[in-house]
Length: 191
Image (cartoon, rainbow, N blue to C red; front, top):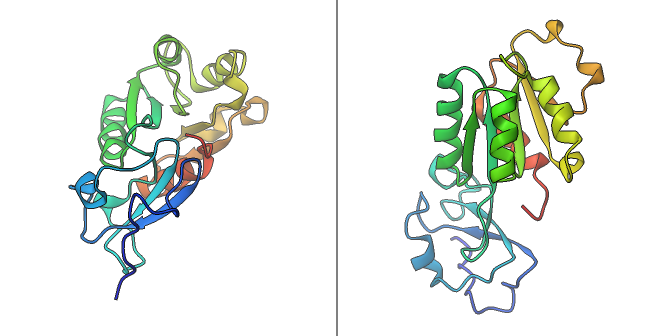
C-alpha cells in the first residue's frame, strides 16, 4: 500500500522546504488537480511515481521544480551541432526544465543577458567562441562565479581543461540519464 498523498493545506507542506510527493499514477498530467492546486510558492518538490514503486518514471522524473507560483529552472545548452541542442532541449523539457539553446559561446553570452540560466551545458569545440572561452567569460560576469557549468567534448585531449573553471567535464557521447543526474546534483537548492 502506498503512502497517502499529503494535503496541500497540511502543516507538512510549507514554503522554503523540500518535499517528496509520490504520484498515484505514472506521468505528471493532472498534478495540480491531484494536489488541489494549493502548493505554496518557494518550496521545492521531488516528484516520484508511481506511488510506492520507489522508481521514477521518465514522464514523472521532473527532478526539482518550483511550486506553481515559482519559476521553472532554466538550462542553457550550447553546441554547434543542432541535433545535440534539439535533442537535449526536447528531453530536458520533458523532465520539467525550461531550455534555451545557442550554437556557440558568443551567442550564449547574448542569450544570458536576456535570461540568466540556472545551469550551463556547453560543448568545448565550437566556432566563434569555444566552451572554454565561454566558461572564462561567464566567470567574469556578475554572478557568473556561482553558475554551474558542465563542459562536454568527444576529444578532451584537444583541450587544456586544467585552466578552465567548469564544475564538471563529461566525455561525449554523454548518456542522457548521466547528464540528468549531474544536472540535479549541480543545481543550487534554490533553483
